[in-house]
Amino acid sequence: MVTVHKDHHSLAAMLGALKMVIARGPHEGSEEFFRILRAMLFYVREFSDQVHYPRESDLYFPLVMEALPNASASVQRNEQSHVNAVHELGMLQRQLSAWQRYGASQRQAFETAAVDLCDRFMAQIELEEADLAALLAQLVDDDAAGPEIDLHLQRESIAPTGTSVENTTPLAIGQDQEFDRLYIDITHWLTQFVTPPSRSKPCMHSGE
Ligand SMILES: [Fe+2]
Image (cartoon, rainbow, N blue to C red; front, side, top):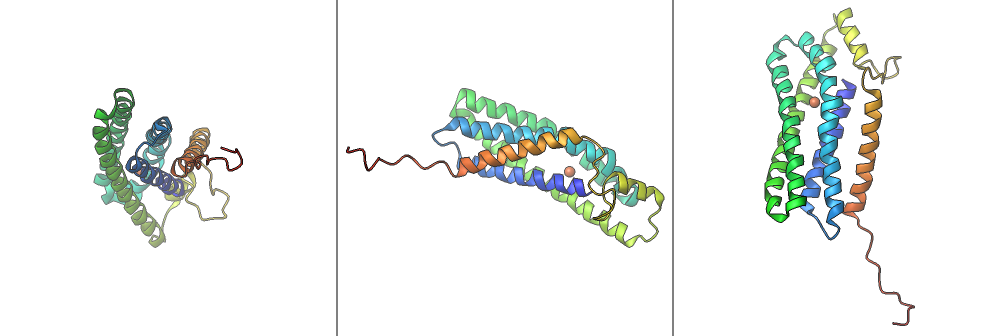
């Protein structure tokens, strides 16, 4: 669950930054603007689809179902939201391409869809975080957490800090690292985007 929470943190940060980039809009070097947006949408879609959603579906949701029998509807809702999100993010990527390829007439459609999707994605993360908090509270309260749950906890790296299973990631280690690198690259591009290099000033010694 530690990893699920970290995934949510990364995705929420990326979604917030995505909305910020859209609000700022393209400036002179519009290619940079589109490159950042493409990378951000790629990150959110592919990290979710390849790493985060499998982690939730294979490890986290079964743990929720086991510890919180009343969470069945919530888990089903979350599973369906995953399918919808991947599809909608793909649509958004195509709308961004349309804006870049066919011009400003496509801008409003992309911006409206992107902001709406970011908001709904964030709301979904908040719902999942609420389930996560409920699960943690249940486990803390449950002195009788048996060996089956213990096994899940080890697989999902929920063990307390300092234990031998801390930070073990049972799947997609290579993918995690690739997406970590992309996340850092995007952060770097974002820094350049929001603080573009100062325009070259007239040379005071040129004699002009
Ligand atoms: Fe999630």
